[in-house]
Every structure is written in C-alpha cells, then in structure tokens.
Image 1 (cartoon, rainbow, N blue to C red):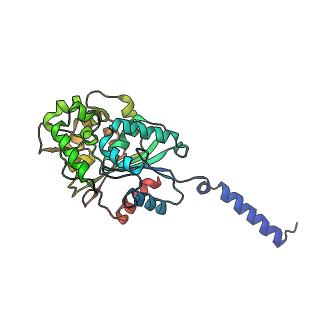
Image 2: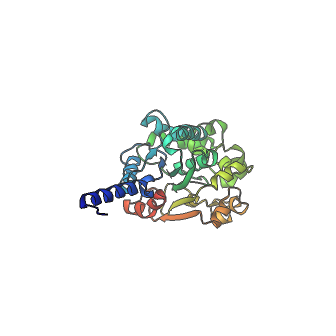
Length: 305
C-alpha cells in the first residue's frame, strides 16, 4: 500500500493533535490558590496582595487565584481585619470558598500574618472544598503577647486596638469584636486565656479536643510555616512555628515539640510531623519583608503542588 506525503502529513498532524489533547499536562490545570491577607491590609492592595497575586500568576501559568475580601469593599476588608469577630470572618470565608466552583476539586492556601491562623481555622472547620497545602507566612499560631507596632497607615486604628487591649484583652466585650484580642495569649494567666479566648483557645484545642478539627487538619498534604527571624511585629516570633512562652513565664520559650499541644498531639501536629507534612522555613528579615526571589524559591514549589 502506498501512502502519499500529503496523507502521511495529515496522519501525523491528527495523531499529534489527538495525543496532545489527551496528554496529562493538557488535561490538568494548576491547583487554585486562595490568599488571606494580614492585619492592616486588604485583598487587593496593588502594593501587597495584588502584587503577590500577580507574582503567582506569572510563575504558575493558568492558575486561578482567589484573594479573600471580608466585606463589600476594600475599606471594609481592611477595617474588618481589626474589628470583626474572627469566628464570623472564618464563617464568611468558608461560605465564599464553598460557593466558588473553581475550587471544588481542592485548593492550596497562603495566609499572611494573622491570615495564616485564620486559614488554619478554615482547614479545621470547613473541609469542603478540600484545602491541600497550607502556607502560613508569619502567622501567629500560638497567639501573641505583645503589640509593638502596626503595619501601613493605620495609626488611628492601631491606637484604638492598643487601648482596648490595655482595657482587658479577655473582657467579653473586647473578645466579641476585637480581632487581635481573639488571639492574645497571656502566658502569665493561662487559665483566663483558656476560659475567655473565643478564637485561639478553640482552634488550638486548649479546653477540649474536637476530633473533627484534628482529622481535618491532618488531611493537609503539607503545612508550611514561615518564621521571620528578625520580626519586630510579632511577639514572640516563635509563635510563627507554634512555639510560645512556657506557662507562667514571659521569658522562657518552648518550641513546638515541647508544648503540650504537640506532646499530647491535641491537634495532630505530632503525627503530621512524623509523616513529613510539617515544613519549617525562615526568612532572615522583619515581618513579611521578603524578596520575589525568596518567595519564588521557597514558596512557589508548594503552590505548584
């Protein structure tokens, strides 16, 4: 049988097109990414989260990036980072994610500063759609015991927050709406913290072990935590790796593996650690001060997974 050059070329072209269409790379889109900003920021600030979104889209072609906006506009989103009950914010975020059909098969998540622990709460409370990798960039997972300064141009709000914290972080009125009070962790008054904290004490299983929280968090493929070794905003900076002051002390520090949260495996972190799911990274800079090169080298690989 004789095949002409024209027929052969057509055969090769069709074969190439068909094979290309059904190749795994052609059928698989990048895993979507969800971003939650930190205190004093918003979803879409072109100098912060907008820049991060653009950087990711540049590095991971075709990726869908959802930057969470808590409120109806950027101003509300920024204010709510100070003055909306965190549990309410997490519920709103879960609702937004559940309604986003582009996330139905799963997504990776990256939280900046307080957005890190907020997204962890999403992972623990809202398993659908499934979070695959969680990247916490300077998140305060054991809370804070200090409020040295605020980011950006929020001096009025920051002064208001300080006054309320001085009034009493565990006052029920303050706990009902002040975001930073809801992850305030006083190591000199552990019992009051456990009793009064409406957010952090709950997600850290301080009073009772919610097996659902533990099971859901352990579903993560990777839990990446970034600590800023020169951090002047987060006190203590060790909280970014789940470390914290020893109960009863404001100076002696315990790393994650020496806390009861880990030794009693109240959250599943010990088992996740044994499975290689916990990733500890550092940036030798101040809070959230990293270069594009550092971000690309250290975090993009987990966004691409």
